[in-house]
Figure: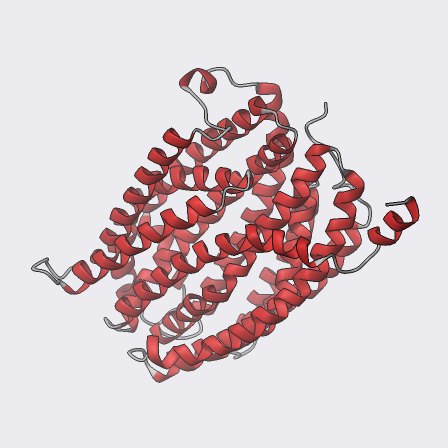
Length: 464
């Protein structure tokens, strides 16, 4: 192929079908894994919803704390994954192992914080989620029961997240999918056993949902440990490796990855604070309605993980190989493909609103109405959000982690004060408040697009 052909190809908006097939080969198993986990969550919500608005609200405010922990763990893994993927592209095993050590050390710190929140001061923390709610005490009684037990989920979740993310970052996406299927079956079965007391087991209700999750997470962790010990992926470490940390590289990963962690923390704190404000706009019907909408929306939110990981693997591997021009070209193809993919996801999301009376028929009419309005709005925003995830994945693949930190930080400076003011001075409901918060994402997408044009992300991080 001559130079002119290469130049024309570089500026093509869409890539060849073979490119998108290879991208989907990475993205679809990850999306399938997330979809399976989401179905488990939906089944959990369906079973708990049968216990009424108050008990479902208790489980879901506790679930918000677990969500913060999961986002933090995933952010730490993503920070290490930036380097792990590039070292994989450069075929440097030592670098991959050091990236894994980074994940282990930093997630360990997050684990101890999670234990403090879930087992030592759960009521104090959960009370922040229902300030102003007319049924706060009843909701908290249920939430504390669930939160304490969920503390036992922390360690297996950390180990599974580290291994699953590392496997995906070297392109091994099928094993995490199959392991997720196994954990899903276990979780669903024990939900049925313990929530309502089947097969002679005691009826544990909210505590039963937590117990089922603990069992499933432990099984998942054991399968991951057995798998990597047998397959020996290139990032696998020994005790000797963990005791001989390359602290210079560790500091470099922390320098770049710390911005990813901070960016995700800004985002999740913003989500948690605004959720607490929504919850204060009524009683248990508001909490259960809002939380059930996310349980439904998670069926199409699986697109985010697939698109983000596929983009990170494709761009990160090219940058690690030193193919900078090819990375630029494929970035454009990924952007165009993400918009088209987001439109398909939007239509799928709109269709999921039909599940609400089936899955959440036990909730009050007010809760179902809130759920339906939220599901429809979130579906309409999917093309924008999928594109934004692709932007962030491209920037982080090349180590430009400052973009997410500054853009998410600026967005938070708008959304949190704005939501407080609207809640304080207007009577608008939780759905309208949510629409205001997410409208700021239009500005974030535009700012990220302009930032990426500076090409700070076009870097091979494996070269000193």
